[in-house]
Length: 308
Length: 308
Image (tube, rainbow over all chains, first blue to last red; front, side, top):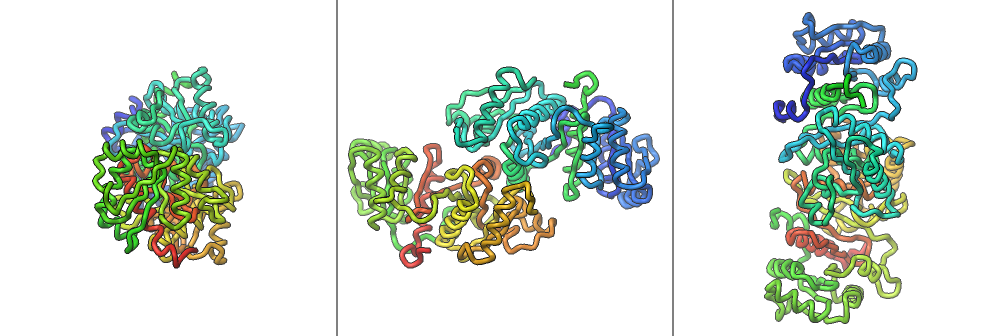
């Protein structure tokens, strides 16, 4: 991936936001932080146990420990570090929450806490971004990781979360394709019915600053040639910025096929919370973790004066 | 695609089988037939209306009209041509049925006729084969086109149809991965429950000559590295010949992503009938149509003495 191109399609903020890390206790996280600080894209608040943070810092040869770009907040254990990181974001001392070694379920419990979490009215949903060879713009996909079999009301929130996030990242009015196996509305295929409802919600202005169309096949969504062959007249077909999958299996298999056979580099964040949540997995490469962080940082851009 | 490599992974029959075409009335079909005859892989029985067959033959500059490789059977209309082609296969005068310009629903009605169709005990299912850059063997996928939301009993038949077909094509004991979003059995994810049941059916010998494992993510199914990272111990993980998707959306999106971003060449047939049914679409390239035909031809190999 070309970081310069990526930076320009992501439109990073022009100030230096702070990232609160929940349980910063593995070396690869500090390796990523080292790169991010060198790129001058953010500063970090590391929450974790003192002993494990020290060990990871040493292992990663992290060179910014004493700098203004890194602050350390020792906590009793992983769970306490998670709560502290969430409170850090809630109190506006940090703009992005990033998962460290904390268990995902434990972190989400803190994020979803009614008293001191980061809840909005919407569900949380995962948004992936793919940098693909032969394609200039990023391609976004939701939801390959959080919601198993969303109903129409949940799909509406997934669309809103994706649209709001990508809007902040820099696309004025994102084009959103709701995927199905066919591009016609078929009463015996629930995915096509939900897609049609979402498209109509969009044209009635119920979904805010985005343009939603569906059902669309994956080919009609991303290829103008394929859309033209099927005579699909749509502002979205062939030009989709965001793909919404009918359920987790479709999204997850697409995610992995783009990565394994499509040569994609991928990043991902959770949308739907009061701040972007960067949720990388242990097996991610440093490059992929950095991509996810950049996505999260882009999604806070203008957060204060553009909070819809 | 390299046709020589493809031929060797497909193990075409060593005699010259006959293909019955249902409604042979478009030029691109005769262009494909021209190539197939030159490759000496089959002969054709063209069923259609006299006028439209003549027109298409002329348009395609089809040069084998007068040869032993082409016979013409004029019928009243498209539907009659379909029935005649099906009867041709049922009467053992042809080994493969191929869709021409006939409407798919009309052709399937003839195929599924209880009196003079090509029914077996199983449902019909679509089986796609992908030739992918960087992968030696073909990768098979079912079902991206026929069954919308198969239940466990239908999934069992989809597995059997795929296994029997690929077995005839030349893989002694195909490895079959049942896809899901995760590789653990999760009571709230139906795809993982069905996958677990199919895996267990296989280990109890209920699914014949194949090895089924699941749930597996797409990455764990096709990449040994990914499977090893997750510590999955399985004869199938990372080495799958066939992928079974939980429902049509997952299969269809995977099909199209492999084609659009994975550089795949794809062919497909219907399995589960008494003979392979080659069902190409108008928008397929001649190359893709030919690939589908070759798949169908391979799947009749040893049909007579190996009919399980």
